[in-house]
Length: 244
Image 1 (cartoon, helix red, strand yellow):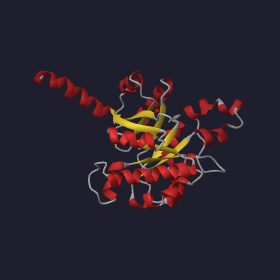
Image 2 (tube, rainbow, N blue to C red; image 1 turned 60 degrees about the vertical axis):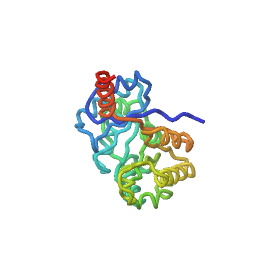
Image 3 (cartoon, one colour; image 1 turned 45 degrees about the horizontal axis):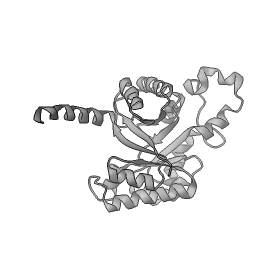
């Protein structure tokens, strides 16, 4: 069994959190532009630092839109994570923005992803290589996206699938996410689609049970915490000293 990459979410433009995460054994970061408080300029700098630290860097864009997807990839991120995918057709339309023609319709830029222009002189196959190496992960967090997960995983412009547990639980009428047996079934359904179509599986793993399922289902990466939750846990641990 291959151990999944240990990942964490970055909610704030905290360079130290990237360094501490690396020092403590994390190998993947998801820079959160959807729910975090990170500007485009800050994201650009954080991607550069993450790459220098040899982290796998994904950016969850604020919305699955062309300009936001292209910007995140131009910053040099290894991949994008697309939230709130409604259904397979929606996934097809927006994931195409992460791939160059003829596979998709990503626009050509000139940032870090292009070695700041140097690629034009030395890499004739740059765009074809980028289509293979740059990853597009779509989130399954709506009821219809779950229904159509097989079709989503089959898309040539989709490289991986990640489960958004809280929104999916709400959409499925279960209320706040508690990792019930029904939630486990949903995760396994997504995992099966990824295996069937040879796509990367990402799963949230905030509990021992969730991590065990992710390992059993062959997840390529898991997200274990975020920078703010890690701060909170650290403060709680320190505060508990007064009561020990």
